[in-house]
Amino acid sequence: MKQKERTFVIIKPDGVQRSLVGEIISRFERAGLKITTLKLGYAEEAKCWEHYSKDDVWFEAKGQITIKSRQDNNLPITKSAIEYGKDIIRALVNYMTCSPVVFMVLEGNSAVQIVKKLVGGTEPLTSEVGTIRGDYTLDSYELSNVDERAVRNLIHCSDKPEEAEREIKLWLKEEDLLSYNLLSHQILYDVNLDGIKE
Image 1 (cartoon, helix red, strand yellow):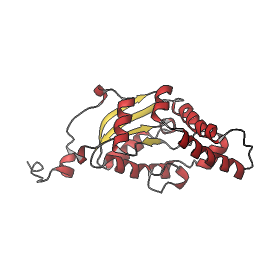
Image 2 (cartoon, one colour; image 1 turned 45 degrees about the vertical axis):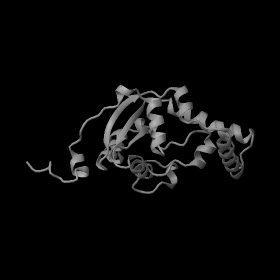
Image 3 (cartoon, helix red, strand yellow; image 1 turned 180 degrees about the vertical axis):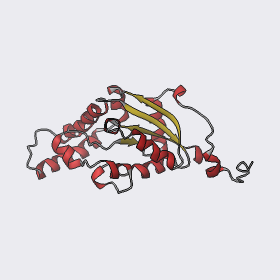
Image 4 (spheres, one colour; image 1 turned 60 degrees about the vertical axis):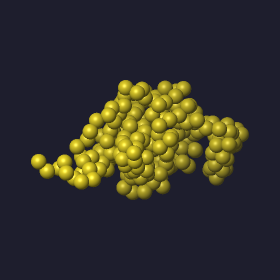
């Protein structure tokens, strides 16, 4: 059922450390999404590697981008493209495990696409104004490549419903997922609106 679609979100260490958790959650709530899980905790290193499960084709492609960025900035090239690609995940794992994060499951009609729209593009520098990343951070791929660190973009969100389900199973236990009625969903989803009047 489309109105019960679930998506997975992690508010990353920079979101927690900059005290933006409440602001980020309020954006999702104001859109009409229902929170079914909200949990503060540490991301485990092994789960991060599984979460960012990438293959050599991905490592090579991303590594080539890093090499070009280093050339453009007159920085030395000391590794293969694959190793630079793996460095991206190493930096992400280091970043994701440096501080508590907030794990969330959100539910609602087309939840995956709604959250992606609210969060904005992966690179904060090019995220649109009005999105969470566009409004609250100014990092860029270029700067993070030069600094050899993960881009600090506040949030991870799932790209597809199947990915959301995989990530939910990876990070959360079944008992973490709550099922309940949200009264505001009546105005969104009640076909006849017959439950509104007393």
